[in-house]
Length: 336
Image (cartoon, rainbow, N blue to C red; front, side, top):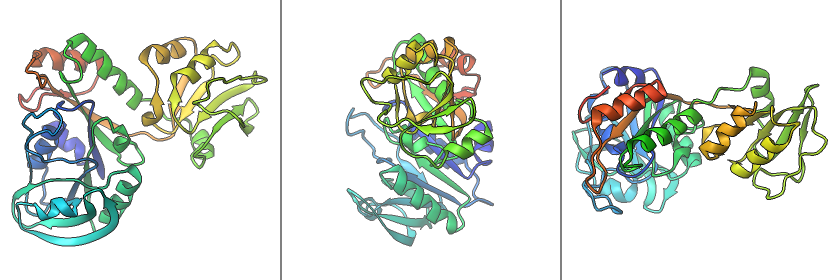
């Protein structure tokens, strides 16, 4: 299937679910079963816990994670001891989780594992850099529930998004909500000069005026309840290093001199804006750009909710693909 060929073009991949039971683990299982190992060294880990037979929240059955000989994996000490395969221990990191240190190993036989690797984006990046130094060609990261930060471009070059009836049992709503997330993931990159100037800045709100002067807006954060943009008639770009929220965008939109401003954020995981507020800002003449961008390869769907409600798979794939202009797969029914 095309999705495997697309994955092999990158050095890192995140698989992220928009809700529990949207098929994220099934997607990971599908990829691990089919990815070729003849000329690629593959490592896999999870920012949550993956491979449990029963979901600890919904009590529904979950697919187990099976590794093939030659695959590398990162998991906690506790879950490493519970593995059901023969493996070679590669490293025990100083990166710790609530379940112990992160162990890196290579599977020598086929078998099942529980994956519970680095629990933060920072420690995940450290682990990924370490395994790449050991000759790994592709790192696959299983993202945790509502932890889109694991799909940040600072973590992975490419991503697959899993959605489904558990996210919304209404097809129209499901398509609309998923399409908005895809729209954020696909936000355009800022121009090269802006990238170079703003990338080193990790805090605060900054303005670039028509002359190219960069100024920090002291006393203003994107979360401030009362933001007054005064004397900024010549501002053409605003950079928000932290989270971008509704209130900030609304105040920009209502400021006559700033409604056409270019907003810049680090990446899509920093945007916490409702579709309504976002689209009003864009419609009013504003724009949103990012400093880092991942390549969204595909969206997968699970048309069945934990309560047993089922959407029509073919119709869901077709409607969602039309809305986002990307391949959409129901991996259990080979829909594309």
